[in-house]
Length: 288
Image 1 (cartoon, helix red, strand yellow):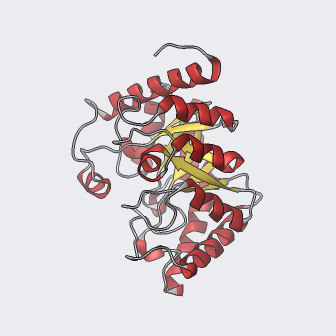
Image 2 (cartoon, rainbow, N blue to C red):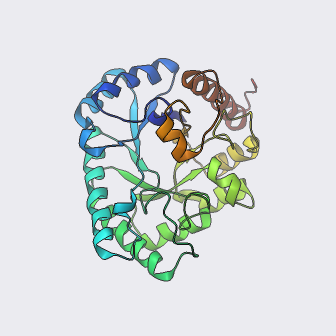
């Protein structure tokens, strides 16, 4: 198992000035850096690839579509913009050597129609994602849809939703991305949701139920890691939290307090807990 941390814990952007974060996360002990190309036009894909290679770390990318590029919009022009932007992000991921492109990459993050998901929205989303997946096919890039809680989206809230979506898209390079922060709000049983996802699971975020440090929260971690083991998941477990000191970002994700004395402290404590829990559940090495 490898362990990742998201760049938004440290910075609200990712341009050339943020390349030093590769060194920061590698020094903390992470072997995967999950980057968010907040502004795709400023994303230093080639330089990032080279720096990650020099450090011996792998890269994943997390990107959420904006409302003006919403692939489930009733406006076909907006949907077309979403497909176009998604293809651009795919190109950047390939250029950077990213393994998995995850997140709310199937509809606009924060978009809600005020109604339950419609049949039209489902069809629009599946069609758009299939086009994006076909565009990425053969590149080695996996694209994974992340389930979101009801306060961030009305589209894919549960593992069952995401599995049905990926099954209908029907492409081998399209997988499911689960995140415990969202799951604890939407699933009846986290472990069973993971088991039902099975081989469709392509990426996993192990986040505190409050976006703080895992192990100091309400997620049933023993059962969660046991379920991951049961389905044979041994890829990457990622930490996704956000820096409350970055006001614009904090306001978007509704983080109003510190969960640790610094972003680095949160990252280190999260990694220590997750590595220990992994060793305990997968190999019986108890150190917690």
